[in-house]
Length: 322
Image (tube, rainbow, N blue to C red; front, side, top):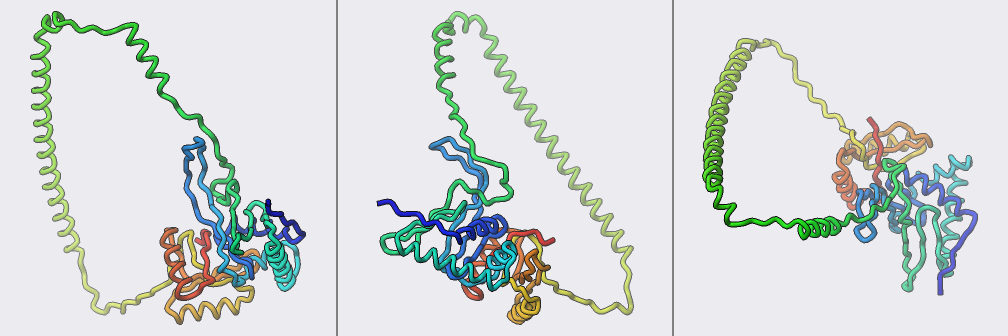
């Protein structure tokens, strides 16, 4: 028996989730779970000869339910309501989903995927394969290219060989014996030329090495002549500033009150981190970063470590902050 699909008013919130998935790699729905995106490179489906562009694949994690403020603030901004009203709408939204799932219905999130319960009453998520949340691939779509067949050309060549066969006779080969000696001469000349070339390259390398040694010696003498001593040098001042560059940033939290963000910075600094408080977002949130990375895999490795031992609600932000 096919599962029934549920539709209700608060499903409008799924549109907001889809909007956020274009900008963030983690969107938490308080009390329900989190949608995560991961990068997938361009690939070819050999069975259908389909060329697919780079994309961001959506997955779901039921364990991440703690409110980080991102989704609620976005709902409040779009619907022009208070933060508390937005939270109430989200609670009603998740409550309706839970009831519909318990009734055996399939919940469809527009442009994201479908939720249902299996026979063991475990939550199952099936992402929408056609949706691509990678902004770098905007405008690119999959296309099918017919498979190139080279058998036709082989058959054509075979038919030509049958019509115009090439014959070799012993008389023709014996008529031109000098060709054999000419080939031997060419090989010998090539060998001599190759040996001469290697000898020439060896001499050039020796000459270049000698000239480089002379240049290095000259530079060292000039440096020694320019050396001077300061009798009263100033003390050396060492500064260690936190480095936050790159596209991948581990977020400790997002706060509407700047004072709370400052407290979080102090807490992380006491624990040995080099935190950074970013400029307020367009939604008025102050995001605090653990660290930033140039390499995506290095950032994910550090994120998993922080989630395991420090903060299970930490998430990855992909954004250029330079």
